[in-house]
Image (cartoon, rainbow, N blue to C red; front, top):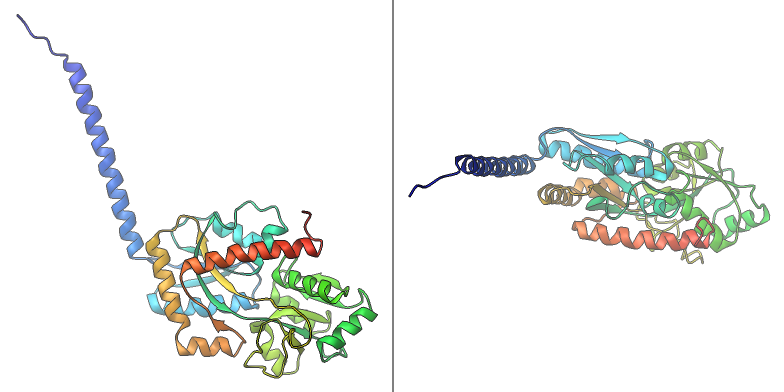
Length: 335
């Protein structure tokens, strides 16, 4: 009796097993290397994209945080301005970037307005990774000093008597300053002419120069101008007065049920590692609790927020829903 072995078949099986083993080893090495790089984050400079032009409140907060993170890690955190389309251009750039934590987005409430006005090429909730909400604050309704109004009631009366003759500036079509103005105009039953810009900076400059008469501006962009009498503050959109300009009333105190929050949020592309998110969240929570940081932002009418990424995620969901309702009410969105 003789035995016959299929040597070729056995060799093929051995080769397949060897190749499979190599693939597993390579995968494990890749995971190990990726994890090692993540745990040493950041290993190079990090870009924080601001989806507006320089000079606004978002830009201000981004630069404060970038400077603090640079000092903390001895790696450069660079602020990059990419303005346009109510913040969606810069947002799309970040959300379609690598998710390694080296390109981040510091955005504002405009992030939650854009989905209700534009056909976006990204999903604002599923295509991003929430990291932290650094701060919160109000908008301030400011007027050029030539406009003869000193209260919300006087402003509304003037606007009603001069429909579409008052120019109001915004940081862009679909921005939160645009939508806030439209919402108040609906509440007060007034009509003005919209002059959009690619960010708060130039809208403030042109309001100061008198090209526009009215602007809902982030507090950080106009508090010093108010103190120097370059613009006149009429009211703030927060529930309470701002400590640095305590003589300026809220809209609610002025008799109008109108309240808007001007928050900022740090996000990244979807799929960022938990370690990178936790490191950024921990670092920024620490930064915004430091006395010099809180003092700087308080002089601009802002307060530190902080918290876990889930807090920011919840805020984004709520704000997108709220601004959708507003968009429908003011006629900028068809149901």
